[in-house]
Image 1 (tube, one colour):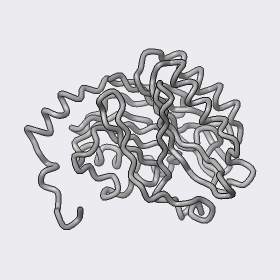
Image 2: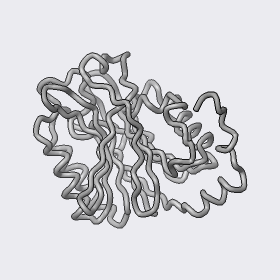
Image 3: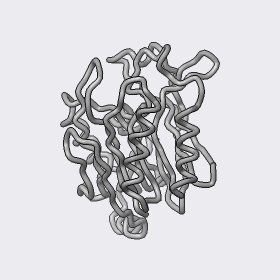
Image 4: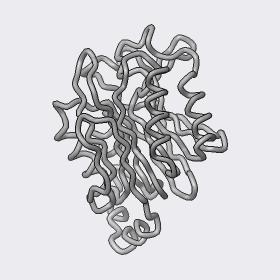
Length: 251
């Protein structure tokens, strides 16, 4: 499967501008079966969501329509409000109109995200074209047990607004999650600045051996693409069955 991660320079609180940017990135990189967008790609990382989080699902509807238009799945998180409650919700939209949602579990207390957003408690795995995708969002990446594969997924998708000052952690954790779970990891991060942080990007696609298949240039809008061979990964898992040796007490 051909997978593309999009590294966008997110415009603060402007879904229309951000939709236009993402549309251009996709249109210049036609042919993938999945496009992965950053965390809160339509607004920027709004820790205080009132007045910024979307009440109408404009960006979600765009994702659904774009998935149909480009005949490819589209995944990314949005700050959204429902019934007076706020969610950092990651959507996975398939070309047939089917949509799945994951609410971020590990809210970033350091920035106050937990004060306004509802915490999700459900792990979400989405099957698309015979491949199982596990959805996690940004800070979730720091928690190996939350990301742990118990033979239930093939690809870990992490969408993020990960700031420059913690780049080393981002790159290390992406690689660690790939190695320990014997899976492909797709990390889509933003670039540019908001009122609080600078974002270098460093979006990457890493295979089960911990090898980087694709990496975005720093500080630039970019689309990175890799071809995922599920048969080769399954054979690696069969020959080197690390996942069979998980600590049973921690399951």
